[in-house]
Length: 74
Image (tube, rainbow, N blue to C red; front, side):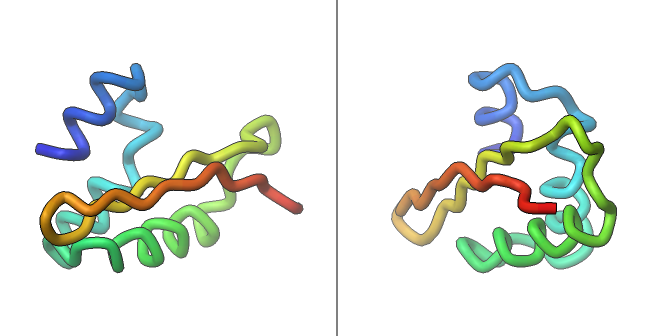
C-alpha cells in the first residue's frame, strides 16, 4: 500500500516504481532494508542516461521514514 500511495501522491507511474514492486514481489516487505535491494536492481538495469536524479524513500517499523535524493554519477 505504501508504494502505491507514494506513487499516487508524487505522480510516479508504474514503470518508474518497477524496481520497488519487483523487490516486494521477490522478497516481501523487508522494511527499510528494501531500499538497498531496489538500488541494486536499478544499478543492474542501468537507468536511461536522461534520468540523473532518483528519489529514495524507505519506511521502517512504526512508519519511520528515511529519504534522500540520489544523483547518478555515471
